[in-house]
Image 1 (tube, rainbow, N blue to C red):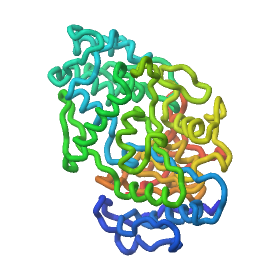
Image 2 (image 1 turned 90 degrees about the vertical axis):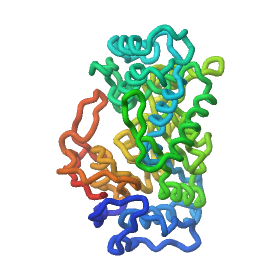
Image 3 (image 1 turned 135 degrees about the vertical axis):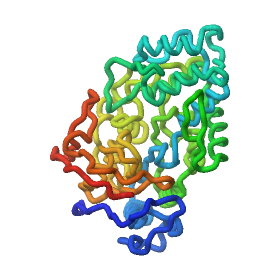
Image 4 (image 1 turned 180 degrees about the vertical axis):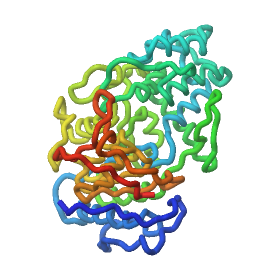
Length: 422
């Protein structure tokens, strides 16, 4: 372990995709080895983050001279590899093109859906469309609005809770599971096609575009981050096995991951159980969680489970536990508290894209093992958080949804941290 170091803080202005780095912050802490695959020096990173990542690539990649299994890198997708959210983009496209099939009962779409949400959806979307046929959401703003409000805020347009019951808040969130469940009745290929058409639309739209779904206004563009495309390219050239681990539906993630050279075998997302070749509302579990309502998504601690199960072939209850050094990823990259567990498991570098999410940024700025790499968002970065992150009191999410202090691996409490990577 290296001694604890502080995250470099030297930019006074917000970093954008095209903004050059001031010379004062660009001095590398590591001299790259010329024979190793190199990150592009013309693509800007915050402070000396490029040098930190290059050092890890040199230490763990093929040019290190070490033998053994290929090192693994795992990336979250939304706002980590791309700007904005591909699930939101796909849902918006589907609603604007009448691709949601009417369920027999809205209660069938989620085990946690409340009677209030069932009533709101039934009243807004109607019952005139036969079960299994497309709802006319492009012309029915009330129906589109109820779906979007539940997706965005887990409540109805009237403000009533859309989900209720018990779930492990470090393994799942009902609103995340609900979107793949809404596409029940379609084939995986059809959903992949919807996502591909949304992708083409979003990439063609200008940066900053907004779109309207029902009466909801939302981001109307997505962009691949040049920095992450280059990082993934360099990692693969250096012998890393690179995966995407996303809380998006897997066919949706697959429609996008090829854009950074990652194939479907290396794309992990929410997996609906299929029946007769079509998606159902049941979702595959992980580890020892075999129930199928969406109790174990690739979400927070669930991302660790899916990485252990799918990449390192660790089965059962053990998949939820942090593994030994040889069975952990070398690099983890994420932007939110939903990513904090697997990013923290990385043994070489923890890349945290700053979206002002407390548990992730508390760990990044505490930098207990000296391997955290905190970086502003590459397009339209977040403003500096006012005041400190409440690491010592309420920065972490507990399994029951309550909040508490963020703890290091040794059980000690992380002190409140000021925002630095902006």
